[in-house]
Image (spheres, rainbow, N blue to C red):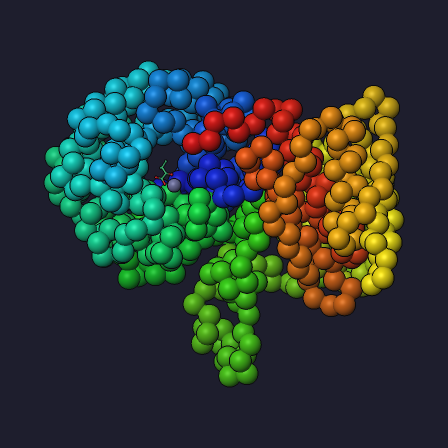
Length: 525
Ligand code: KIV
Ligand code: ZN
């Protein structure tokens, strides 16, 4: 259907370029499965040349996930395209997405090439990519700041060379909606062979306009939108999937005159997908985020509450149910059984094997001893620990902290080390500026001993928030740390904030150790 809006999800590629958001292969597969249930048309699964880990993730998603087209990103270089071609080979429908910058700024300072040279590289790369698949997408990086006549020329040449999708990225989020719309309209009018390709847009959010620019583009002829769940991505992020999809659905009457046919997204899966991506990447969703923020359907003012109770339409332009916000505020507690617990996992979009349900249920029961009511967020936090547990090398056995206003804070930490043959245990003590600092020093000592690391991760951020309400709420600690120039995010939750802090740092250590073992992120794109 020519006018159907194609949803190209790049959460696992551009989204993963968010600082600290590195995902392992299992986590990527988990998210890809949920994206498939959501009904996206294309999943951009990664950049196969960037590391063996990314290659493996794209290959496994291509092999295991059915439904969407599976795409990989490749610079306009033979070795990138070849790696991409190999990684997408198991897919029923695989796409190579190749790109090169077209703005004079990038040509002069980054590529140091002339317009003619870049045009020739683009043509050559597309032809090369066509050896691996018929489905080739070409992106003119920084199109938003490219000379329009040159953009028209390169788009025409790319289609002639065999690209069936042409992507116009606003790479640095510079465009404003009317201007970006005119660029798309101009391309539709000026490029003679444009009707042989799908015109796509990929907008970044540096000025907060990525969604508006994408909508303006489809009003002017674009038929593919590239976007990410929760709008995560490089710098200020990408156009958010849930926003564009809900605009297209909620404003379909208005948009009808642009000939747009709605994408086939199961919008009831949006909330689950948002939660899953947030918990696996460790990137929280701001409370006032459109569609998926915790306040998106909360009515505070008395007049509003009164209106909504009389008729929700007074203050709600879409229902929470339409995006899958659970209607029952079914909260679990001490007396909840396994059945209610499994139902809740499904409601939250967590696909957990039978064995894992048992162990998660046991953890849930432990939590109900410490906490009267267990909210969705608590369960997501438990599940996230479980999912990242698949790469758990160190797990906490116990900790002891001594701290106060007139003592030197000291910590003793004991961990299980799963890489040793007989599941060895390591114990270290250290002091620090505070109890968390002391605990982190003790963990650094353990890691140096167990894994022989010569350097320790450098903490760049530490944040704590309450997972839910109430005095007995769990603390959710997110730690970002740099190791060998790469940022890693760890997360840990507990009713004890020191324990949450220790778990989050162990989570970082586990991710680094896992990435080192898989030699992940060797080339950064
Ligand atoms: O922002 C951008 O230009 C990109 C391209 C690689 C599509 O992410
Ligand atoms: Zn991008």
